[in-house]
Every structure is written in C-alpha cells, then in structure tokens.
Amino acid sequence: MSREVIKIRGGSTLSGEVEISGAKNSAVALIPASLMAAEGEVVLEGLPEISDVNTLMSLLNDLNIRTELDGTVLKINADKAENMPLPNTKVQSLRASYYMMGAMLARFKKCVIGLPGGCPIGPRPIDQHIKGFEALGAKVTNEHGAMYLEAEELKGAKIFFDVVSVGATINMMIAASGAKGQTILENVAKEPEIVDVASLLNSMGADIRGAGTDSIKINGVEKLHGTTHSIIPDRIEAGTYMIVGAAAGEDYTVRNIIPTHMESLISKLQELGVRIETGDDFVKMTKPAKYSPVSVKTQVYPGFATDLQQPMTPLLFMANGVSKVTETIYPARFRHIDELSRMDGKIEQKSGSALIFPSNLKGADVYASDLRAGACLLISGLIAEGVTTIHNVNHIDRGYTDIVKKLQTLGADIWREEISDH
Ligand code: EPU
Image (cartoon, rainbow, N blue to C red; front, side, top):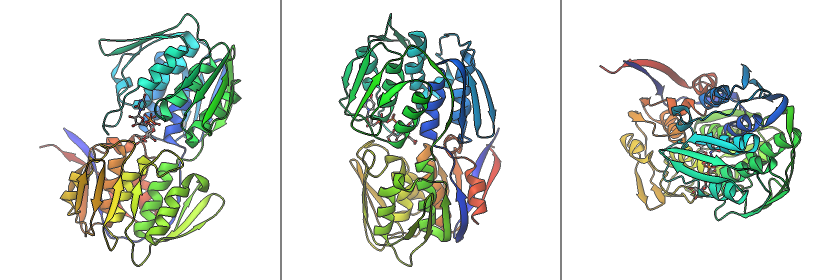
C-alpha cells in the first residue's frame, strides 16, 4: 500500500503573498444549516477546498439533497429533502456532524445519527448540545453508538450554558430557528463563526439577534428559504500563515483576512518582536533578528485561539529564553509534543501547560495526530535544519486549502510524495 507524506526542506526565507480561504469552522456549520431551506437554493460562496466540505456534502446527499460544488461555490437545494438515519462512518469522521442534529431536528423534528468524531484533542463532550435540544422539547437518547433525537414540536426556551461552547451555541441557533416562540441563549460563545452562521440563517428568513455578544435571542419561524451567502475568511488559517511569516517571512503578506479577528495573535507576535503592518484586509510582516520569550494562554474569543496553540509552539523554540503555553480549552491538546521532541525541540509538559526552551529544530519523521498538530509540524519543518517528513497528512487536508501549493508560492521547499509501506 502506498500513502502520501509531506516533505519539507527547512531554512528557506519566505516572501510574497498568500491568500486566505473561507473559514472551515464556519463552512462546517453553514452546510448543515442550509438543509433547513424548505424552498429555494442556498448558494455558499468562498468555501475552503477541504475534505470536511466534501464529507458534509455527501451527508446532505444521503438526505436526497442536491449539491453542486464548483470551485469555492456550493449550491444546495433541499426542496426534496428526506429524513434518513445517518449512523455511518462519514458522521464519525468529523466533529461538526453534530450540526446535522440541530438542522435535522429543526426541519424534520427527528434525527438519527452516529456519534460525532473529530480530532483527538482530549475529551469532547456534547452535553451542552443535548441540554439545549432537551430544553427545546426534544427527547434525546443514545443507543448502540447512535443518537436519536425527536420532538413532536420544538418550543422556544431560555437556555443558560454551563460552559461556553462554539458548537452548542451554533447548534441552538440552528434548532431554535425552527422552534415555536422565542429562545434566549445565555453564556454563549462569541467567535466570528457564530456571527457568520447567524447571518446566513437570517438571510434564509430566521430571526436571530445578538450573535457575537453574551446573549442571543432567536424568534422561531415557520419556514426558511434559499439565499446567497459569502463566508468569512478563516482566522485560523490566517493565523497559521502569520506564524509562518513570523518564523521565516521577509516582505511577507497575508491577504483576505479580517484584521480585527486576529488581534490576540497580532499582539502576541508583536510581543515576540515581530513587526506587523495591518491594512484593511491584509497584514505585512518580516521576521525579527531575535525573538523574546512569551507566555501564551488559550481562551475563548477574543482571547488567544486554542486552534493556534499548537501552530504557535515551533515559533517559541526560536526565542532567547523560556516560553510557556497554557491550554485552558482542551488541556490535553498536546499530542504534538512527542513529535517535536523527535525534532530536538526541548519542551516539558505539565498538566495543561508546556514550557518551551530555546532549541534548534532538526528534520525528522513525524506523525500528525490531528489537524492543528499537523500545522505545528509543518511550521516546525519550515524552520528545521534538513528534511522533515510528515505522516498522516489526511488530518491536514481536512482543514487547510492547498497548503503545500500556498507554501510553495511563498518560496518554501515543500512537496508531497507517495511512499510505500514496505
Ligand atoms: N464542552 C463541553 N460540553 C459541550 C461542548 C463543549 O464540556 O457540550 C467543552 C469542550 O470539551 C471544551 C470547551 O467546552 O473544553 C469548548 O468546546 P467547544 O464546544 O467550543 O468546541 P467545539 O465547538 O466542539 C469548535 C471548533 C474547534 C475549536 C473549538 C474551540 C468546530 C467544528 N470546531 O469546537 O476547532 O478548537 O471550537 O474554539 O467549529 C479545529 O479547527 O482544529 C478545531 C478543533
């Protein structure tokens, strides 16, 4: 059997422009939400070209929903949608399949679906989603690895979340749009992806107010309809390329971003010593001659994103002192550490945090355990001496559009290769 790896010869200085694609974590909610249009076509523009998009399209097809993907534009026609059980491996391949629960419940009042999978970054419960569905009047059971959700009628409710959750906030906006009466969500997440999903739903005829603040009000509506929606840029992809620029960039520009989404990262990179110029929809940067050590603590938006914690780590090996990373959202999101050790990165893990010591990384064979660990290894390979081979690249392709091509355009010595297992 052969499989693909990504190889990188480190040490190149990168320059030029990179264009950021649409946001993965928005796309994976917008696609399921589109199935709620009982009439007319939903057109999603600017989608990222990643495998999660194809998996969700295929789940919609299982419900007799027509999808047509042309580059970054996806047309979805759910006029003839039929409710079918989805207890299959496709569901388990991505976390975001939990949005099918909210959307199917709103449209059909019933959903049978496998348990959502996703990146192995520690425990990822969905109790807040279930609490929300139950508050809206659904009966939720879990049998033989599948979830059964059913409601005679969904009724608006007041829901106070026990933890701030991106997924639960979005799922309740979706489900409550199909409920009778008003739903009030308190202690919600404020990530830009939540605002993006609310804006799609509103242009489909929903009535959602307050997305992006601590409290969201949703007035349920009879029916949703088709619309055209342009997705926001991916702030995590943007952040990943900004970290690349901070590590190896000279006259280096990251385009198609919303700079206000990047503030916590920009200020951390400036603290490290990186010079950044911010424009309307771009940042320009050049790597500094020396980097100061920093402390990074992940927090809900607008704090430092957990999804950038692993990509940020390689940069900290370049500092002239000890840096610290504290992970408060997923305290076990440290599976990249063993791989960095293979590259001679000196790093010590304590519960929920890691100390990063100045190190010169060396190329090695390393394994991506999850999407953002994969990004971390790519960045490590770009700054390491010699050749790094990254295995399990399917994780990376789940979330980054054309990452090898984009890095090649910036001048990186990176390529894909088929290797045989024997
Ligand atoms: N949590 C619960 N119960 C729940 C839901 C969440 O205890 O019912 C906890 C989680 O265990 C975690 C915290 O709440 O400790 C926050 O989790 P959240 O629900 O916000 O995460 P998510 O919605 O499942 C999304 C992104 C993740 C990103 C997190 C945090 C998608 C599909 N995934 O996950 O993205 O890390 O928000 O920002 O939107 C990635 O892109 O690599 C990725 C993992």
